[in-house]
Length: 329
Image 1 (cartoon, one colour):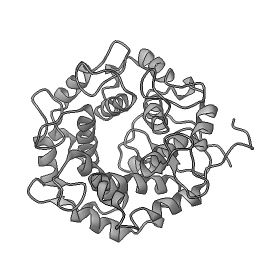
Image 2: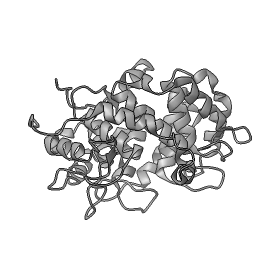
Image 3: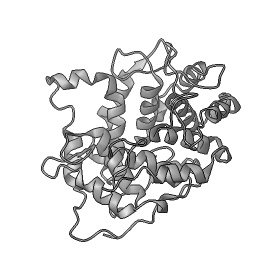
Image 4: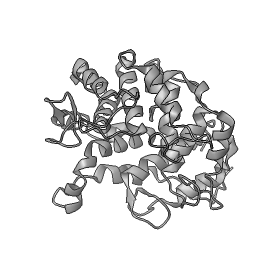
């Protein structure tokens, strides 16, 4: 158990930080990150939801913005208005509208057609019409179709077969066949197999040890051997271990302290590691990691869908994952 003298999660500051994002639209960085806008809205909304402050962000304005990113030609969502549809932004749009109880705004048949059209003969899913493939995109397609209730329209056997061919000798998974194991890719493959009901495809013991070995002496987790720790792996690694029921294999107290040490305790937000610039990506995945660790005062997060657990349970989609029990403040 962490000491009472350890840093605490600064929930009000983090909520205020997320609320402030996008306020200065004259800033160059605002325009340079337009390709991440839809993802960033999902990251921010999920973070405040897990911190118990979902209503701190304007629902109607958010829903209207998401719909302004609809690509009528493709049948999916772009990252910003006028951007081409991509599987990443399409999934984020679905997740946002699901969390905001606004899925009635979705043209579900067209979105399903768009996603299914991206599946390749090998079973993998491309990111968009240009054909880039990655196990991330396969996971995005599977998750999106699952939330929409149309997973049956995908060739799930072919999809599972592609993931199987991405498995490495260390039990992990890469971005494509033959690619090295990476914690983020491990998550997308493990979570995809959880949704498909194919967790028997995984070498649980070997992968469990590979994931546990991502913890460094300072408590943080890295994405692959010989790399630095990074707060975002607090989710990528923990989510996989949660799905495999092996979170107890790491030092959870040291990881909690590492995540909390990466906070900006003056202006809010969480960075990749202590002393670095905060961003909404690491803020979400730091908070998500703490939720899976049972940190007090947070809402439960579903590690497969990376959305509030009560929402996924209500939709009848919960799989057999296990997080640490929620501690009392």
